[in-house]
Length: 178
Image (cartoon, rainbow, N blue to C red; front, side, top):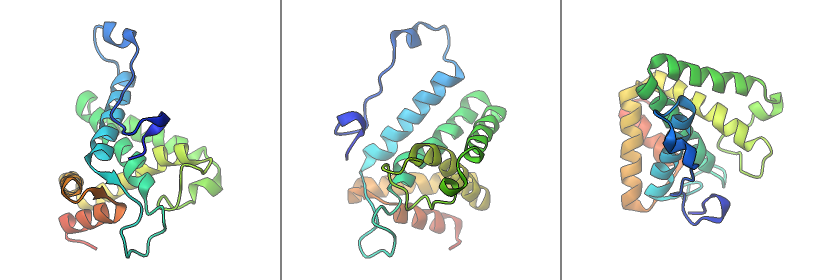
């Protein structure tokens, strides 16, 4: 896959020496690490592709959803696992407030249509994306949601590609809802 900063994959995380000299990992560092590891897990599992061939989705087909929004959502959940439910709630609150501060036009963009070339990409994907996954989680349940994510990542390792359509289908199957 095309990684950031010219790397051919997203499996590199650069940390300063001071990170390792702290007596314990603070929440900010943990969030950075969790986000980076989630990117490696999702983007490293298989090639993240645009629309599934034959799909009616746009050409970008939700690459941003898989490549950036999903890891951000998983990082927030990891914050909750490490620092408790209140830390998770605060992380979702930060995403919500950041989303509300963005331009109205940017907020209304469909996540499946946005590309890294859009000026609002990073802010929108890192705020709206996790909120959308949280809404889906509340509808289907956390365990089913995480199971669907894990099964779509496992299937992607076999098929060689991961798409938003694959993830949508896995969540639909796990939840028993369309």
